[in-house]
Amino acid sequence: MTQAPATVIHAGLGITEGEAQRLYCEAFKQALDVYCDPTKCRKPRGIFNNYFFDALKSLPPPNTAAGQQLANATLREMPILVGAVTGTAQAVAGAPAMAGSVGPVAQALATAHSNAAAALGATGGLVTGGLGGLVRSCLAIGAMLGKGVLNWGILRLAGTRLKFPDGMVGNRILEIKGPFDKHKPKQQQAYKDFAGGVDPMVADMAVCMPGQKKKCPRRV
Image (tube, rainbow, N blue to C red; front, side, top):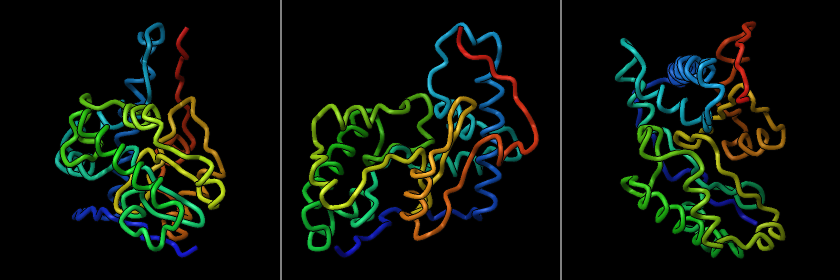
């Protein structure tokens, strides 16, 4: 099956890839300090990604403006298809001749995502890291899955998988791994395949704080 376009969103950033990675790491470290505050370990802390994007849009000077710009350009939970048909759900839905049997599923995904994002207050039907407290992680996914829009059998038979990356800028994936999260090799490979063989950007301890250890109490 012919591959559908992988990219429908162009970031249009005046920020280099290296600078984006640096800002993501600054946000990771700031989020980690808040998330791992020992006074919070007896309270529901929620999902680390939310702390990360809150930090990215509120970095201290001189990174404030660039962090906000990057947060606004980083799409959250954008549904992507990887495998025999590769692309964002929106891109695949817009190329039905190439998408084949996956086309109707992609269209349902794209519509559900747009509707869920709009219901959550996201302008343009896109959930970005700049929305901060207005939109919390997994809400768009839950709204989509709750509508029963997916026909898993079609995707499986077509050799195509559905993923919801933590973040995406252009066709570049961002993986965020908090202190209790682990990398999944198959998922990392899927994101690399989506980006044409380019590894995802990563915000985690190994990349952002190499050689350091952060004591982070679990909720008790």
